[in-house]
Length: 348
Picture (cartoon, rainbow, N blue to C red):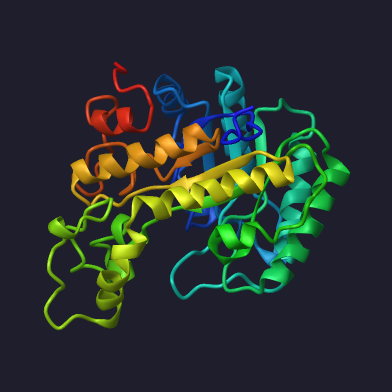
């Protein structure tokens, strides 16, 4: 047996359909931002799974008992039907506020439990193509507390629905270390989830929200001869980026992470899912492609399912187009990037 391979998830590769059911109230959401044709197009690219971030904390109101509005359930019913027709999995991801100063409330189960009670009751008799992801990137919450919460929510789902796969992720932004502390759910339909944006200094160089606008031109893997100079009068963030990158930017550091994932999967006897991975478009295209090629290969070699972040966005699989303009399929696809991600670069 190849020890690098893990127990496979029921799906292999796909993308996140972002900025649709996030950040807005139900009234503000455009039900036609993504259509059935977008799902058809993703299938043409070779995707067998779509991860759909849903910001229930914006959509559902406490005064209504966190009832999911009919407008949203209609969208989800349509998405489920489209994916079933295409024989493509859909991950319903309870997404959340992940800005730098945000935090997961210590009583987040007061919305998680009613939302997942509704979803499990709604989809318990539907096809296996529907997958539940309990919560995206819990953070700034004590790890033991989060582990207690996710165990309770998992139990609630299983009291209603024993059929569908459930994705679980650790605290600390779905980190590897926190994933290792998660309960052993003793459930043969649980998938453990992590996110991968490392080396962060490379994948987020130029990103204003990380205060890294002047951190640009870093190569991956690290190469001392190709490193740019540190900016003049560097900030503390900039200084740390340049000081830590000679170690963090090594290919060996990346490989070590993926070896840890495979080891964890064997210990838990459960599949793994990289629900998000990506490299910001401020990184030159050839360097982005290099990073995606390496990371995709490491995921594939270990049999880890994956959905990249994202589709249309600034981490996406299209060439950048004018702000506010929706890219065209297939004309604006970044075909070199698709090939590096082992997706169909010849789609017409």
